[in-house]
Length: 159
Image (cartoon, rainbow, N blue to C red):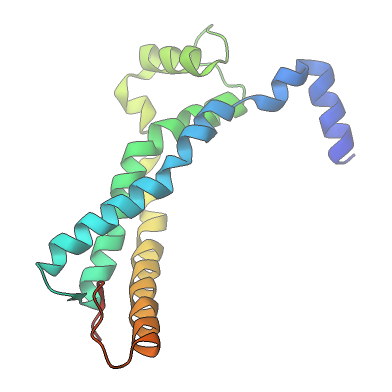
């Protein structure tokens, strides 16, 4: 039993529509990275306080805070996507995005949309902090290599 058996079973049980279950929340989740980078750039500017460089601690903190912002903003979509893909209806609503959201709201309220966010955020925050620290360090190194005589105009980590 492999890929083709699974695809055949899905098509037999749910039709072509079953192949697209959870697509709408996945499309919304594309914004997660955009939200994270937008928040990071704003936090980096705020942490820098007008300086052209930020410290490694500031880069790490801004990276973690921006990840937290993006996660809190998009987590309800992740919950809806998961519910739809597991075909786990909270009530008797259809498994559309709106139906799943309405059923979840009635059954669990706002808390249901954020169920499990704690462990999820704790798992990704440290990696995000390190990622942005490395990103800023690499950006600073590239700027020094490409423009050794001029000072960098964009923010980079001062080591």
